[in-house]
Image (cartoon, rainbow over all chains, first blue to last red; front, side, top):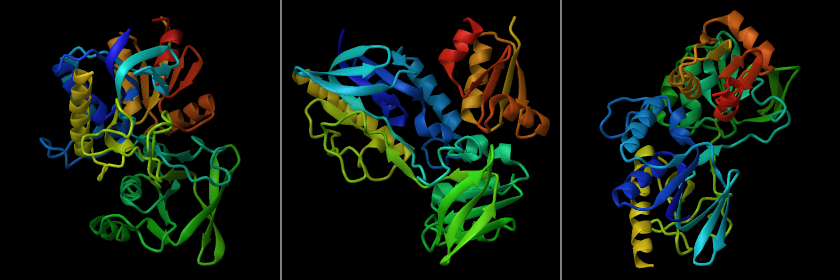
Length: 300
Length: 77
């Protein structure tokens, strides 16, 4: 089977590309780990057009409902492992097989960045988590720490401050970097302690996390926490391809028509160097990428 | 019929996906919200050796996360 297009990933960019491809009557398939991607974890979304307020989960449900009407072939639990050049087209490898295609849209999004400190691997899911929305309620009435003072870290603090006994916010820089409006809110919360200029050195415990050691104001300090929420940003899922140009963050470089440097390979959304990693932006990028892929395939 | 227990939190998207999946397949299950029921949280940690949600117990077989393939196999659907 030789497809005209394979879309990799089904977050906002991939789903939008899928809807456009279906409307263009393209012969295509979507290969993906899951449907929704990072949007699933967004707690409250107030800047997606058409909704004053919607949770990420509900927005993904709406996306699913929308694409369902087009009878799109979405293969969930089938992430692409490798993209190979194959004559004038490409061969995509998954655990379940190989797919030949004339064009590709990479919309694989991003994943949370890890701390890379001693104890992190050992205590993953044993106190260390990368999803405050998912695991927050497990730490009711316990001491917890959020690592990262950007917007997602502060969002986690706001969620946890209603659940946990005490919440530490640990930021390596000397100031919090999120929106000022939220910084003021957090500084006024009674059971929240903000530690800026603090670097995580080690996470320790027995079966589960018991605490962590920080370098803080030229000293080492230990804080007793049972939950650690890592919110230090994200990295692009761009490892599946090695023959397109990427920037120093690993993001796939695209032009304004979502072309990568390699003919027939397009990319869209948070995996690219596009400005503003936002759901609404990713949707627009997915639409553009599909229109470009359609133009490309039509000219072959 | 297999005895199915789900340990979840009210906010976790994969927990909702798991529960929706079981309902779609007409699988009866008991759901515990481990954000509220502390004894069930302890039970989940004891069974799975970890703290992430969701956890599903199918006749004593413990699966962490919404692992659709394994869950389908274990349920025989």
